[in-house]
Length: 248
Ligand code: SAM
Image (cartoon, rainbow, N blue to C red):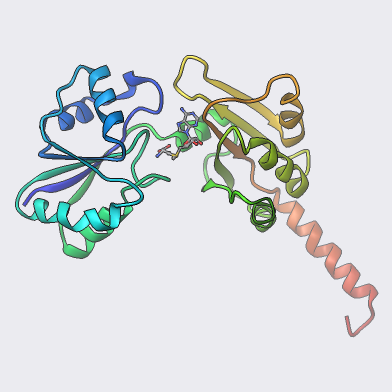
């Protein structure tokens, strides 16, 4: 039997490609790539010849493609799964083949490497002992606000992916739901020449947009709520309940 290998690819700096990724690109029997042109572009930049058959494996076909690829694994093939950048399955294709491999009792392993979420978390300067990955916020303003409201008392550091055309709206909603003083970092263009990390508060980072609107790929890392915030809200609620009299 062969195996499925999920492999992380660089998120900007091609030098982050691991020796193991390079060897897998050369030797895997099948490479399942989110975008085949981007795969060949990466291989060119690495000076690597992709040895195996290349198939497109993306959000729209991954459920249908998982079983045929796993049939090949059963027959002895090494199937390499790569996305456009970073770790497959993290807001990228890959989960369908992992789940089906588990269900079918087939081996699946990982060649780890870059992922924007952990890179941003480590650079943010915010607590890393407990964190939660939130991926992309909902696109619609009303859903985004509701989602952020549900996270207002989340005590762990939160990681969000964002895009340049939604960042203004997302930051405004963060300001409304979390207040201006919540600590955060905006991490842009990680591992690239113009990498930038802005550290401050929701208010100060939103204010910085006037002079320097953020461009490129970005991750927001937001401090968890101070447990005292929840305590004070509970206490206030109890006091208000108390004011309403014995029945309240
Ligand atoms: N699988 C990827 C990973 O492991 O990071 C994430 C893919 S997701 C479709 C793309 C998002 O990741 C971008 O919109 C951005 O939020 C974040 N991202 C990817 N590369 C980045 C970079 N170099 N700098 C900052 N954020 C990045």
